[in-house]
Image (cartoon, rainbow, N blue to C red; front, side, top):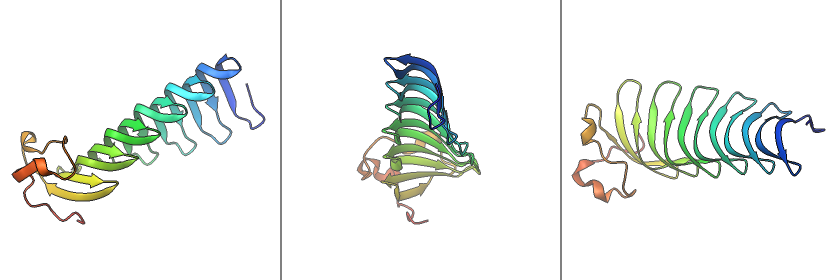
Length: 171
């Protein structure tokens, strides 16, 4: 079916609505191929954006929801949980330069504990609140077993001596 807007859908319909498996090519260049429910992306699917970004994963009511991987055209990618279209819960962000961050997210921002691992082997334990880094401690060369847990509260009270003196969060 082709709309006046030049959007085009090929797939299953139910009661006059896109439902089941199908592919929709939008006039502005985005393409979604996957599961539909009542005219909305719902279930597993792949969306390729006009700017060449790509998301593969779960959708609910047209929003990224559940597990998925978003890859930006610049080579960065996020693999992890999504809630209401935003990164939420645990996820891994890989930068195009091979640096990586793994930790917790809320409302599309780093929030909670995580590790930043640089391409050259540096490891930093970090704590974040609403996208603002609160603390950063260098663990480069430390054994994996000695790294702080990613579970726990933002205040870090459970870390005790394991954190030691925090590096300046503005580094």
